[in-house]
Length: 242
Image (cartoon, rainbow, N blue to C red; front, side):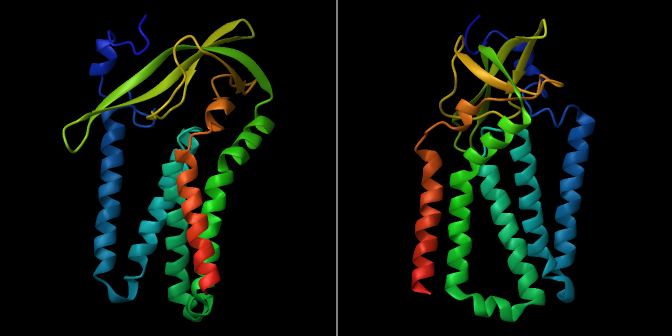
């Protein structure tokens, strides 16, 4: 069995084999596309009504926030992009509501307030993996020795025609006499465990398919520190400037 299972043609040709387990059928796909299209139509309608125009950016912020939270829930490893989206959505909602109902508050806030918000961004992104690890260690009480059975992959075409590969490791472990194979719901790029590698997983004793790989979440990739450091530096600059 090869690491990436290139011989698994049936899975590669299944339109729903490599998704996040949220869209499982054409009916689900139609509902998602239809709902998103309706949401966009609502934004267009609201933008044409002067008294309700402020709701357009507020609903965009709400969309970013909700989608960010959903993807954070789906993946316990690929958190940077969804966390950033959720934070952007929350701030956009805050400014839209404040500008509509408390305009004087925004004037008083000034650069210091924006700096505090920006530094809060950076701190949340910096501390999130450790907070998430602590949360799941409290929630999942059972530790099992797991092996990476294989690495699942997905190939997608980029806008420039290149093929990008993303991965998700599939873990195998035995619990209460039963063998389980589990994987994250989202694919990620970059480094990942290799086939045959052993990991300690935290699992839910009542639902062993719910697991957490703390080592992946706490990986010391320098890219995970880039955005937090940028936000902290920018926020500190704005705070001192104000």
